[in-house]
Image (cartoon, rainbow, N blue to C red; front, side, top):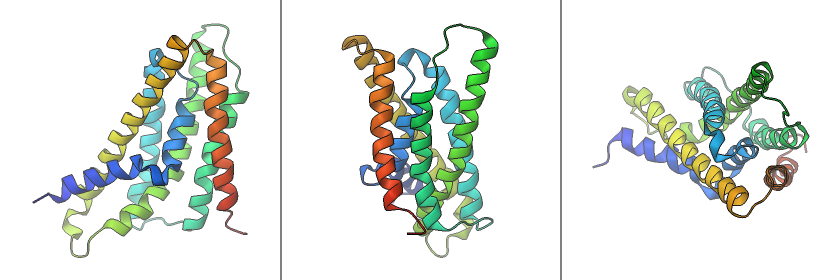
Length: 203
């Protein structure tokens, strides 16, 4: 018989990797669009920030400490994707290698990932709360931990796929980094704009 921990681990993994609810996947795609496989350490920083953000609000919302209207959360998720994609396109590539400039860009990206992770965590919380079984209050924290770990494993798999795709695109097919960024970010922006328009809460 499958344990409660492994069940929620699988649940978290399947939730983040479910193509039918691709908004979270699309955000990770947009987040990684400007990076190459050789820059995996920078991506690790961003994914860690995103994880911290969504883990915090997932826990607070699942414990019913904070709660936000689901319609607004569903609207704000594609807004975070659109914002990330536009930032990718509008940002200027660094021509130098100065440590201060590198740190400043990393801090900005880290802040965005953390902030947007908070919003996505609220989206995760609705699914997680609906998945809880009555009478299992004593295992709530282990289920929450397992779900978070499952989500993180799914995210890492998605990141690996994106970075490998970028490697093939830029190193094998010889696509310029700027063109790759424009293609991936543009696709993410277009899809997220459609989602946002479909989810306008005041319409």
